[in-house]
Image (cartoon, rainbow, N blue to C red; front, top):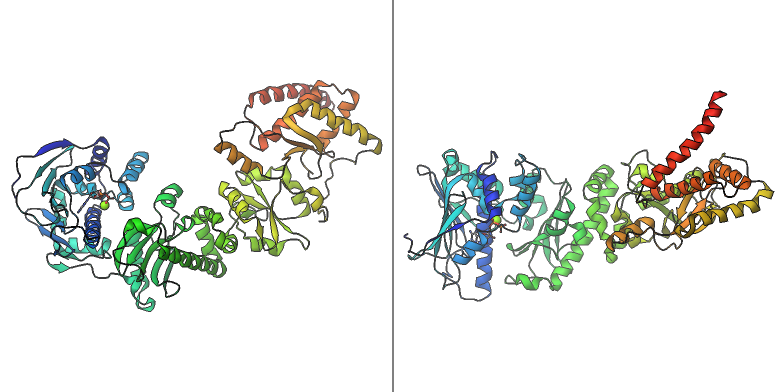
Length: 635
Ligand code: ADP
Ligand code: MG
């Protein structure tokens, strides 16, 4: 084919150059994935061609069969991948091959930048698309003819070093794209039949369009989800899973089901072992592949599965949808909604079964996918099942690894207990310091430990479980806990003398004076045993952690006003009270009160400026060291 004189030379965009630079100089050993990328693009192009024809618009070469053909010439070190898909016009070539593709490449670049030298795995995992061909090619020539009959055929050439040339072809060419890969010296293996065939079988076996290598069809196991379950081996499931996800591990769970009512579909779903990073997989990458009668309609359809089950990968194939259903109209499709409802129920039941039959496996699942799963708090239709599947760490365990469900909790609850208690903290260590927990510890009541912001949303979403209210320990009314026996009595000091009770109230007023507008109230605490004081929310509408989340959202940096509760039986408070009785205006006492207040703020995560605190501690130490020196002498 000869080029017309309309050729022109162009520079790749900066980001493409960067990507090419990484790929061209890559020492990545598993270069064969470039063929997977070319075949996958060809397959996408064939799908698009089928849509165009089905939608009734005029198309070039309507009689062409939809297929991919691979030819090679070992002596010339040449590999050619052709398809009869939609093809590319001149503008499309410049736009699509000249900019970074949406899916894999951008993420790849980001990761490659973060972790130098760690290309191994990245290429395979993300799929860097068309450009990966430059790992093996010294030159690539694309010839393409668009499906739109009026578009002339074009040729594109590049050595992947920074520029490409593009021009029109004046000789006749049939619809589709033909990619010539002129291999580098060390890439000659990719012009060998057995090598090509084995790569296709490994990475592209489940492509639904026929792939021919020199007239021999090589992809042979299509649509295993349509086959009866018993006829498929574990190996075949594993192979399909790896093709689908680029994962190198076996799936954690495989779920193969056919349904006839209320809607007909077959599905083959997998739960991967490893957790996918939340923003990456959870948000954008989730979805199931939608097929209609074995023909792929859409990759990663998000209407087939709710986001919180987004860790699930797989396919759904339905007879009930028309083949020419337009992608745009899929969203409002009632059938998809029905399928999604059934798929969700099946997955939840499957997880319930797994939780019952194999606790370790479920824990494995939870540790990898639990975070995403928690987003299910808004799935009201399945709330009971959702709540049943939640897991938390709790006061019952020695470390942060242990997991309990609401059901486990209820089983161990006290006979009269009507609440499930939880506390939120950034870690187990932080939670252990919470003064709010003391009364629960003293009474031997289990408390769920929440370390993840999403837990808080889960709690807000569920609110009630099998007759038990979910109750944050901050909001628990100490009066309601009185009915439970105290296991270990606090032995700090003797109870307050009767005649001291009134002066103590005055002392509390004094504390309110010292703290002023920073607290709403100072009062006696019924919940503390080891700590001298704590902060309590005045309205019990919201937990501190939820308050913090909302503050972040609204960029509010103020410190919320709370109730300052004081433990009358704590030695420190008693000492301050004694000082107060001698001199209500004592400086040491007021400094100590300031210090106690700021320590409480610190524990709740509200202290913004620790400098004042450092100075104060210094002063308090000055004073107390003088006292201690006198005492120590006598020892
Ligand atoms: P992605 O496939 O993720 O979009 P690629 O880098 O693999 O990214 O491909 C970039 C774009 O080039 C594709 O989106 C498509 O528009 C176009 N393209 C690549 N190969 C072909 C082909 N064989 N036929 C038609 N268009 C293609
Ligand atoms: Mg691609």
